[in-house]
Length: 112
Image 1 (cartoon, rainbow, N blue to C red):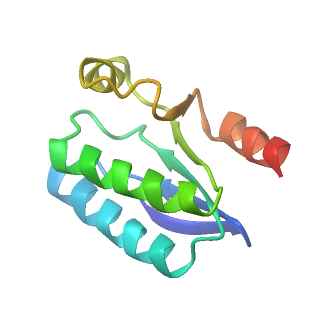
Image 2: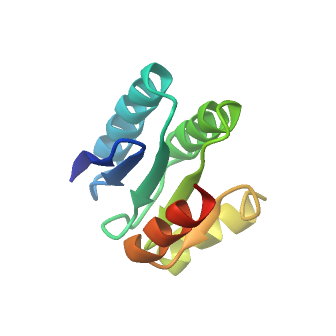
């Protein structure tokens, strides 16, 4: 769990399973990206079962921060039920969903 510098320009984030901890982790990530916007971000959802609306809001803020600097956000290992939340909210096309971290890392390297 936590935020890890995979490389100079890629952050890997493993979200925790608890709703309040997810929100806290995403807030920390937004603050970090606001200070260091020259990175792509990969968020691993493998522990996440339920995503509260405040976390979706933080993801939208994060996406906006990254887009300003032409950087990307990838969501990996998103469970079907969690992905369905994005569909219902009309956000499926807003985010880049990938199957796993290796796929996300390959996508990041491909866009550099």
